[in-house]
Length: 178
Image 1 (cartoon, rainbow, N blue to C red):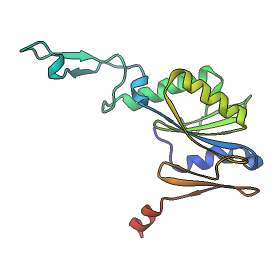
Image 2 (image 1 turned 180 degrees about the vertical axis):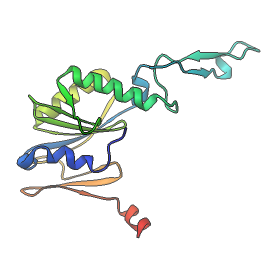
Image 3 (image 1 turned 60 degrees about the horizontal axis):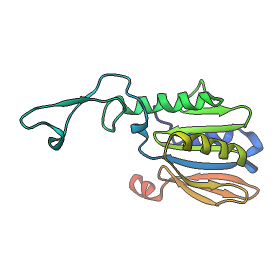
């Protein structure tokens, strides 16, 4: 299941007027699918250099691998388990949306890309939790006292003091459609 572009609106709309003070963080988990345990038997053919001469050998995957049918699902299950373990609750309306009540933090997942909104302490907590288990690239943080523009999923997100956030499609996509 993948978050739709409108999920960004879900992430910052949850807070009502808090969008004027909360910050938005964009995170990218590197090699995410390799970080999730395999949930079904998947065998892969070994490369020639790992086979015994003349043998046609396969290996059972213990972890997920890009290109397998279950990889995205396994990643979603693993990340969800880790998030719930530190107090996030999955939204009933979307399996890609999470909320942490105590931190008043919101998180939306699109594959290995995550967008979160909270006060700086909540964003730092989330980044710390993810970095303990995964290799995370912290690309941008928008909001008061931070960056004013970021690119996320081929879209531009901007922050304007006193006005909040705006979300813009990729101009290249507009030209292709029009």
